[in-house]
Amino acid sequence: MNIKESSRLFFVSQLLFLLLFFFVNHPIKYLFAILSLFSAIKLDGFDGMIKRSLQFFPLIIFGYCYKNGLSGEMTFIVGGIFGLLSLLVGLFTRRKMDTLFLSVNCFLIGGALMSYFHFSWLLKFYGMLRESSLYAWVVIVGIITTIFSSEGFINVKCEQKESTVKLYSLFFLIISVVVLLFSLYFKGGENYILSAALPFVILIFSKKYIQMHLKKVCSK
Image (cartoon, rainbow, N blue to C red; front, side, top):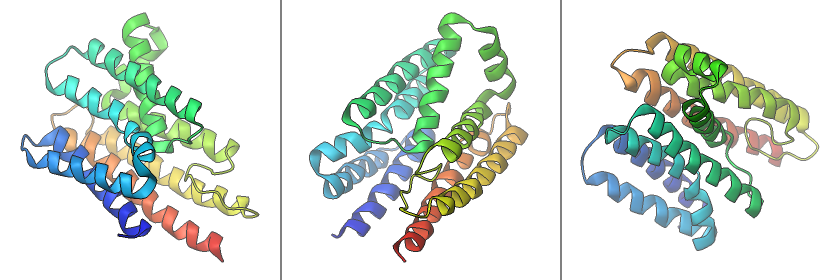
């Protein structure tokens, strides 16, 4: 199995595992968990597998707590602790985190601060946006990384073509804003697939496609 095939397997298996974890009570989800670990080992070795998989853990822990009836405040606090740990691991290992999962960690840490300290502005932010607050964090992170990061919002290093990275990042940022609006339209209802899950899937697939196209441009 080559690197490209391993990367694709890692991406698809992790995505399917996340979706099945949140919405399906079936043992098949653990098969995708094993596949994602195997493909990550193929990509980066055992150490790289640990670093890649750590990006998903805070979201998985948050979902697990939510599904098992933990209070909203405790769910955010537990998720925020794991989100902070994930950021610290990335900082100390000097591994740049995917901007989408950086947004997830900001969402969890912000929710934990809201739940523990009851900051009024965070209470308003999460109270008004509800599940769509995750995608508001995506847009915030997107604006900051598009402006200040050499890899942009899209997480691609392109030597001597930084303006191209900015352009592709801006395109992905526009998609993120549309996804936020889509989530806002369905927020507050019982259909979390439309307001929470589907928008995240759209972002992951969109980013992957844009990254592939940008890497081709950069290799020319």
